[in-house]
Length: 159
Image (cartoon, rainbow, N blue to C red; front, side, top):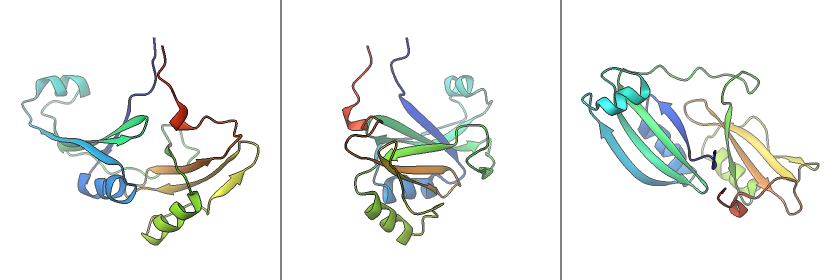
């Protein structure tokens, strides 16, 4: 039985740069960091990569955890920046309070946005897309009172 989403994992070629964005700029708490050597056979079996080694960090994002991995061996390729319509996992959405202020703060810090925050009356949200330093799409979304969408702070664990 599926109980919910536990975590999202991002692979990067520069963990320090991505931590600067997700922890330093967005404010997610780094819960743990680790390094695994090429002798960690259990990890190699899980990911299907011989001689895999990594640096990683686990960040708390409210109701979901975000893992960030930089493979030291084998060296990964940079993200191929794709439009929102391409197949695959396309974005991570963060619920925020005060989206206009967050947008202004992040834009001033150099975060590239697709547009200013857009109000979607039929859903009761205001939302916008941006890109993290690797080119992954990050959505900021403010859920307004009366929205048809759940507020993440009201989620309860599933059975």
